Amino acid sequence: MTVAHEVGRALVHAGIDTAFGVVGSGNFVVTNAMVAAGARYVAARHEGGAATMADAYARMTGGPAAVTVHQGCGLTNALTGVTEAAKSRTALVVVAAEATQPRSNFFVDQAALAAAVGAVPVRIASAADAAGQAAAAVARAVEERRVVLLNLPLDVQGEAAAAGEVTVRPAPFPPAPVDLDGVRRLADALRVARRPVFVAGRGARGPGCQAALEALAARCGALLATSAVAKGLFAGGPWSLDVSGGFASPLAAELISGADLVVGWGCALNMWTTRHGRLIGEDAVVAQVDLDADALGAHRDVAVGVVGDVRATAEAVAAVLDGPDAAGYRTAEVATAIRERVRWRDVPFSDRGGEGRIDPRALTIALDDLLPAERVVAVDSGNFMGYPSMFLDVPDEFGFCFTQAFQSVGLGLSTAIGAALARPDRLPVAALGDGGALMGASELETVVRLGLPMVVIVYDDAAYGAEVHHFGPEGHPLDTVRFPETDFAALARGYGFDAVTARTVDDLAPVAAWLAGPRSAPLLIDAKVAAGEPSWWLEEAFRGH
Image (cartoon, rainbow, N blue to C red; front, side, top):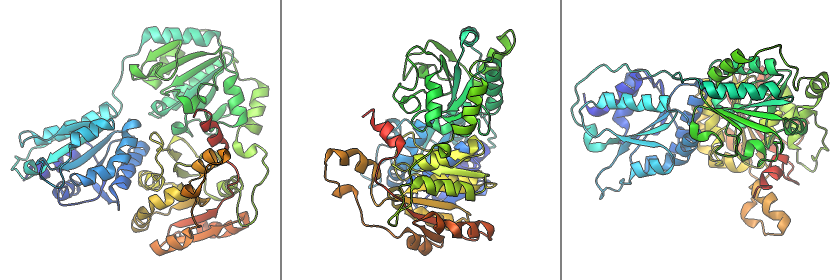
C-alpha cells in the first residue's frame, strides 16, 4: 500500500463518489485506487473538459466531485475549468500529481497556479497521515465551498503508507448562526415595503431554500426572481419573474425596476444581475443575505446586510413578521401581466429567418415545444447564449447548469456531460455556439462513449458573434472573427451522433422522430442561425463596456 493508494481510497471514503480526468503516469495509481474504493471514473478527452464536467456534476448533485490530472501540463490544461469552478465556489478537489524537481520537464509551481485562479493549494508532503490529509482536503472543499488543489508529489506517492480507515464525511451545508440583528432589520424593511422583489442566487439553491423564500414572499407580497445560475428555482410559480439582469424579459425588467425593496438572497447583485446597476431604482432599498460577510455590498451599497444561510434567515424573518400577510406587489394586474408577458417567447418579434438561415428565437421556441419538460440545459458563452437560456424552460434549479462565472467560451459541452451524469433522469441539452462547439469538439466522443442520450444544439453563425456585433458597427475589419461555414452535422456523424441541419423550423421534424425513437445515439442539431444583429442580452452587456 503506497501513499497514492491510500490517498485515492481516503478521498472516496471522505465523500468523493465520482472523479473525472485524463490519466497519465503521475495520476495513474491514485485514480485506479479511487476506482477500487468504489468511485466512478469518467475519462474525458481533455483536462479542461474533465474539470468542467466535475464542476457541473458537483453543482447538480450538491456534493463534492474530483478531477484527477497529470503533473504540470495536465494541471495547466485544466486551469480554465478550475478557474470557473473556483469563481463559482464549487466544492471540487483537484487531484494533481506534482513534479517537485525544478529540472523536470513537468515542473511548474502548482501551488502558485492554484492560488492565482482562486483555488486553495494543499500538498501531501509525507506518508505520515496521508489519508487524513486527503480527507481534510475534501472536508475543506465542502465546508468552505472551495476548489482545493491536492498536490501529490511523485516521490511521496511511491512511499509506503500504513492502511487506515478514513470515514470523514463533512456535512454538505454546515449550519450557520442566525444574525438576529440582521433578521430584525430585514423584517423592518419588509414591513414597510409596498413593492418588494426577491432575487435568489447560487446561495439559494440549497435544500429547503425555495420553500422558505416562497413562504416569506407570500407573507410580504414579494415577486420572485433569480440570477442566471439559479434559473428555475421558482419555475412555474405565478409570481416568478424568471431571471433578473441582462436576460430579463421587458416585463421582468419593468417590475424589478419598479421595486421599492430588492433583497438579494445568496446573490451577488453584480453587474449582470442588475444591468450594471440600472435595473434597481434609484430610491429602492437594497438588502442582501449571504453566508460570506465579504460578499455583502461587494458590488453595490446595501442598506441592510445579513450574514447567514438563506433558508435559516428566511425562516427567521418570517417568524418575526407580525400581522396579516401583505398584498405588496401581488396585485391582480401584476398577476395577469406575469401570466401573459413575462416569458420571452410571449414577446412579439420580427422573424429574421430566410436565405438559408433560421431565426434563433424561432428555432429555440420550436425546440422548447419539442423537447420533454424534464430536461437539464447547459449553455456555452457567446452572442447566442440568451436564446437557449431564456427560451428553453427548465423544471427547477437543477434543470439549468450555467458555467459562466469566468465567461469562457468552450465549456458548454463538458458542462452538459457533467450535468447529464448527475441527473440521468432528465434529457441533457447542450446549447453551443459554433466557436464553443469547435473548442470542445473532442468531448463529442465522450458523449458517444458514455451512451448519453444528449441533444446538442449548435447555433452556427460562422463567426465569433459577440466580436462581430461589438466591433462591426464601428467599422473595424472582421476577418479575424469570421469563418467559412462548418458542417457540424457531418462532424457529429463522424463521432457517432445522429444529426440534422436546420435552416428553417420545418427542418426540425427529424428531432421529433429521434425523441420518439430509441435514442440509441445522441443527436446534434446544426442550426444555421441568422446573425444580422446582436442578441438583446449582448446589447445590454456592451452598455457597460
